[in-house]
Amino acid sequence: MPHTILEKTGDYIAQSAGKAARAGSAAVDAVGDGVEMARSAARQGRDTAEDILNGAARQIERKPLQSVLAAGALAFGAGLVVGLFIKRR
Image 1: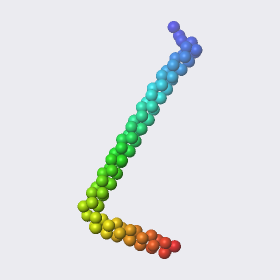
Image 2: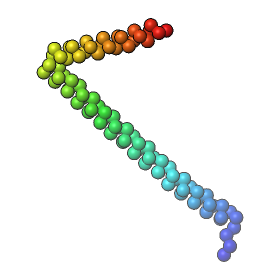
Image 3: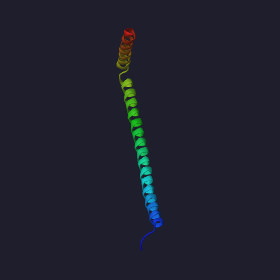
Image 4: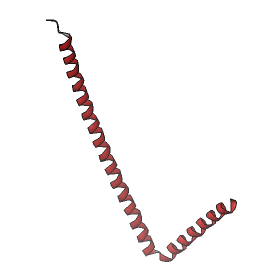
């Protein structure tokens, strides 16, 4: 039995709605995966930063004089670089 134009249109709309629903579901899944990846990266970054800070604290406790001298040398070097850039202007 031949389908009428109205029936064909209804079938087409139903198929399109199904495709749109699947696409929407895939988009929601992709966003959820992205959020989870971002949370994981943030967690990993925070853990790495804590490890670095803890290592620096241990180094300062073990060798306080060297730590102070190193910090002073870095500050002096940074001051020289900034001074050179300001002088050139």
